[in-house]
Length: 550
Image (cartoon, rainbow, N blue to C red; front, side):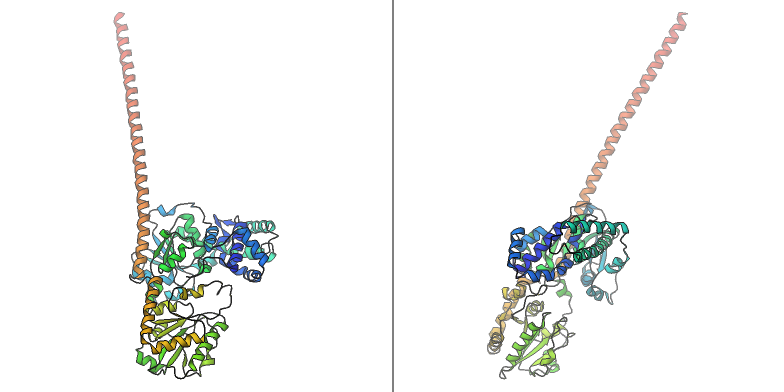
């Protein structure tokens, strides 16, 4: 679904290098946390050019295969897991019930968690946007991650120890093509100090704010990476609750104790990566539930606004953040289709916010409308007949709006971050709709949709089947997520109560033993006093007898 199980050349080299990094620098630690684990995302960026350069090096690829024996992504999850052992079990600490979650989940928190103590962590632009105009209850507090990070100072002694450790470890790995360089040594030192600050800030927060449950939408970047590690160190539940489609690049390795996933497809995908089934709960997606899904315009006013002939099929293309060649290919397909004057179709182009392609090249095509990036996506899709995309979340949203879907499959060049496996075919694998591999496919699909009204109904049913397996929606995701949180809290409280019962029993046993000791001491003292009285009595009788004999 969201990436194949077998490792391709990109995966073999990248994950083998990460494994070597984790193992070779495992003694670089701070507060029992292995620093390399906290900077995995930065390391992946650091090795990008090296990995790309080695993809065509068959000898190097084969040597890495033989050395590390990584064949599946499940193997990768297993060897990169490296969870810290529990140092102090805070899960049994009474009163530690505050819930930590990213501010982007504020709508859910205000809706369902009003009775709980909440700490909202701010670490992204989306978190800051979520707080705008919101009035928080007294039991809600905000923790600005980067602001707190800037306040932390790493002592000279710690800095010196870090530099010494790195110097020794780099010297031990001097033959390694990456680890032996001065560039790497400098990079690792800088990142290690930032990691130390992150560990310090987040550990202090956990202790001071008495965090009992942690939630984050992603583990591959901080604060999520370090929070998951600290969760393992202190046995604090950590819920991985993705809000966007994620692939191996942003999921593996994962150290969460619980997973709140969209649907059965995601559950099975995680299970194939070695995540235990009992850790996974199908909740649905909070982002979709709380999104502004208002369709503002009625159909007639919408088509009038965009000068669309009433008899035309309205087809919306939602682009993605690919290299320009990909979106250029799609636009060429669309342009060719519009050359068929007899085909009553109008295309709406909704560019992705990160899309840099120049769509103004097509503004003179009277069958194409280039929509502003700021236009509300639900209003657009709600007034469309068909939605086209490559692999975007919008396919899921379109399916939930009962729209027909065309999955576009142009040739996408390899990209270290954006295209390294078959993730972008996940909609084809899931049979979300009709697949188009070229302009001829697209033209044929649209002709059939126009001529055969029953095909649109069939595609809507196909999309409904796709959404039923991709996104749980029979129960509001917020309700299922709340149940998961309450279940964790109940389990925690059961443990706390058991611990308190054990403590009370121990205290009662101690009191009982002390009482026995006290009674023994009283009896011993009474016996001693009795003996003393007896001795005094005998002495008194003896003295009396001697006086009489005189």
